[in-house]
Length: 165
Image (cartoon, rainbow, N blue to C red; front, side, top):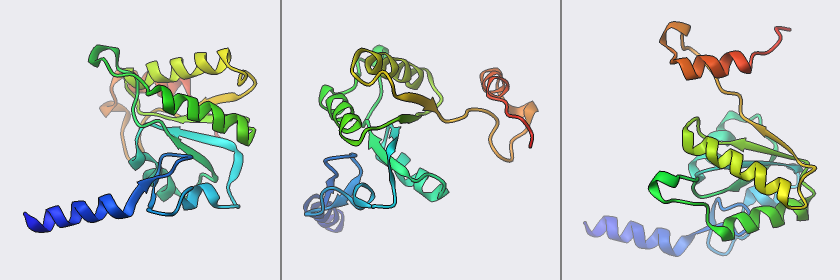
């Protein structure tokens, strides 16, 4: 038990959240390496629900924009909302960086859909109305079969179909 306590104490001393994107960074390194990387596109911002989502997206090695972790999502039934400070930080960063596209990399559930609708509405209300809002494609996962997909997944896959090149 002492080893676990020591590890937790070390994490508390050495790890922080980036003040720009909300991703993890070493104490004393703020903003994080992703936010200070000059090879990333400031005009493209990917919004995620959780810190771990950034790690997962980075492993795909196909996204070269900036990130923003919302650190949650709307869930009216559970009484959860988006922290006003996170929403304010998102809007400020978008304006500061001149973001032209906001990619919503949210989960495929009712709360995430509500979060996406809420964010789109807030952006329209703010001075960010010219920002293109996109969402990750939803559908059948790689290696999955049509016969194993649920009706909602199939409907989204049909709606998001693409031309074969």
